[in-house]
Image (cartoon, rainbow, N blue to C red; front, side, top):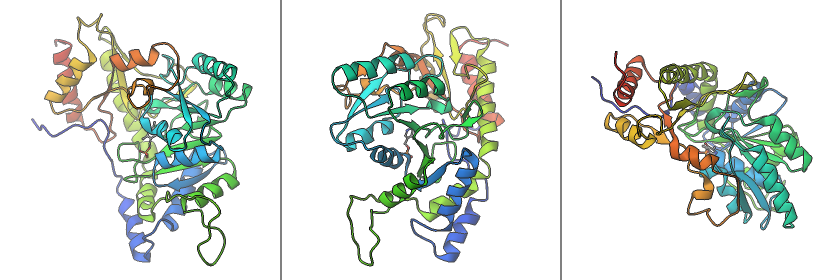
Length: 382
Ligand SMILES: *Cc1c(COP(=O)(O)O)cnc(C)c1O
């Protein structure tokens, strides 16, 4: 049997990407601006709806950094951040000299817990420091509890930076993820649902915010014939080559979401019959996940002591990649001195959770190899 590596999530080209890249070469738009950048932004604006404006940037991390700057975050400010996430959600807080305040997840969507969030806000205010922003994340494509988080943000008048890096194409109550925050963030890194090799975008409803994001991302040049600067700038704009890949990827985005959801269905059906294993699925019909990654939790008390680490090793032996869930930021050595609010939801998820191969490019044969490992691991007999 073929034993090539099965990845968690690898790039999946649709076929038309090269046409747009070739056009960039043919017209010599080999620069961080050009028709593909404008075209990709238009495609994303149309796809997201809700009259948003999109600014294409060099990465999702750059988008979070500029997003925090545009929300006015300065050195010494406090910014609330979902603890269970990729470190790129939190690092830009530190770039700005601000302080992260980490908050636990709830167990329905694995995202920001509204109760812990409000506790954190109340306690920080009582200590004399009102948080200046809330970074909420749609992990693995699963929308966070949008109404609850927005209600709390509105009650305390704190803007939400919506980290939708993993959730392009997901929606909540028929509204696309990326459009809920004061500022939204997308990523097109190589492992995301669509990729430009590396890239990201900022999403806003205000044209002046988009203009400011583009201005800051292109070295903050004032309007003058010479190079004149009144503000600190960044080199964060997306390349016209990368944007060409993005335009091609937009043509197959919805198809690839269907394929990711098919993978999720495969796991949901499989684990339906396995005691002690839960698949992350939408809590109700308000939620639609792109299922960027399919993830499970294993309760070793119900699996004869078999843990998620045992399963990870079994997959590894078969040359199949799987990975523990995001290790919460408040447990990371680099962040452990910062405040944390919550119980142990994210800690338990990290302890028991595993991401499984989820790519839109997985074949029937790949699924057979995955199932063979699972059958063997859980002693499933035919
Ligand atoms: C990937 C990711 C980012 C960062 O995006 P890059 O484009 O890789 O810089 C931020 N937040 C989350 C949750 C991510 O998964």
